[in-house]
Amino acid sequence: KTVIGATLSPSITAIEESISTLNYAQSANGIMNKPVSSSLISFGVGENGFSNERPKEGSSVESWQEMEMRLQYMQAQVEEAQAALARKHLQQQELQDRADKSEADLLESQQKLFNANLEINSLRDAVAEE
Image 1 (cartoon, rainbow, N blue to C red):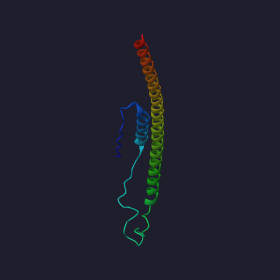
Image 2: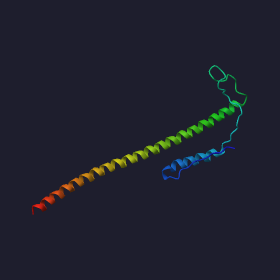
Image 3: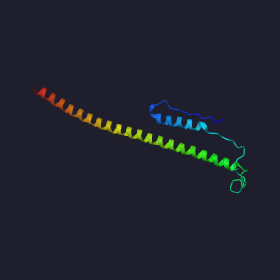
Image 4: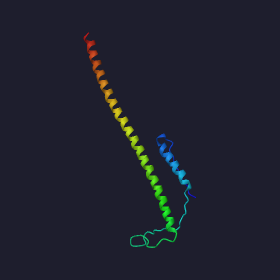
């Protein structure tokens, strides 16, 4: 049997990633594996480090199917990574916009404070003259 562990985040900011994980786990529910005890590639056998032996009859179809499943899995991983990257970019842009607005608000508040201090000093001078 194949077991899939799906890790989800309770955070609202990771809802899309959690849904994607659940969708993948649901679609992977029907995967049927046929373990093969022998490998098609043996490292360290030939000059270039690969075996020169031909694969056993019938195992090339199974390995082709296995490679197709791996390719599909990797494509799904790439899509999930691209979606996560896009979400992170969006979050980073929102934080940058908030930081820019906060800096502008700070400068405005500092200018108001400076103007208020000028007015207070002028009023003190006016009171002192009376």
